Image (cartoon, rainbow, N blue to C red; front, top):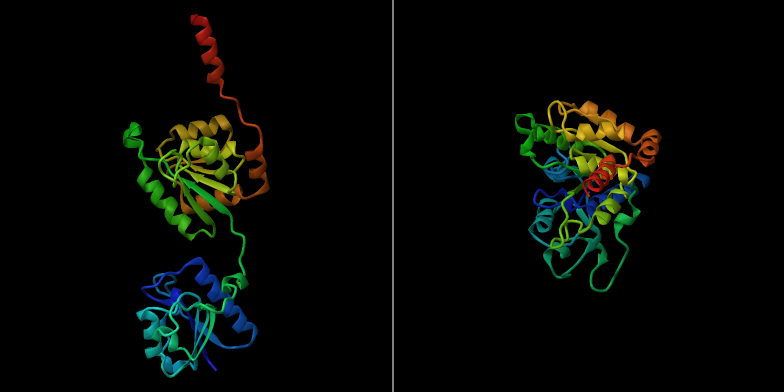
Length: 288
């Protein structure tokens, strides 16, 4: 017996949702524990370099297992045509129309829901790790810095690096809005969000300041050549800020530090009170 395992995350025109991928992992683990040889086929757009359906000729397999998602559409029906010589089984799937050829083409269906039967989703059986959760706060262009701006290059390096880091990424914007649910409406809401993550990655001054206000370590990068207001604020707050020409290795080393106990304790400590507030009051009283 040789099993080909796939699902919607294996289709070129499909999508790899977290639930679908975790469901495929759960089925793969189950087959491995049972001693059943199998190959998981992934979309090359999601996991290039891993086996895809094009890499899996029908004659190499005795069984096809399709996990998670709806039994609907041309791509599912095409599986029946390509793997007609295999015994075909669907597991943990939704069956919106039991008479659809996408569903009737399977020799056995163990549904998640089909109008009558209901079962817990396969993803609940999948094993998950605990990667850090990272809030990403990027600065706008900031034309006031003229030719010293390095925002485009810094953000390209930063976002390409983030793509390779095993972390949960949450893009955030310090801009508040009362007419757009995608933005926080108050500073309290924004700081509350920051307080729930493990690390803040930011090229923006208030990403640094509010991250520390929330007691969260900040991987701060100054997008200005020679240093701008992010570096200046880092000096005031005694918090390290990387320069604009930092490399991916620099970013990795700083993230590792931000995840350590020393950085967490330092971020959670007391931070300086803004001196200009006292100076403002003194100035106003001196003018009265």
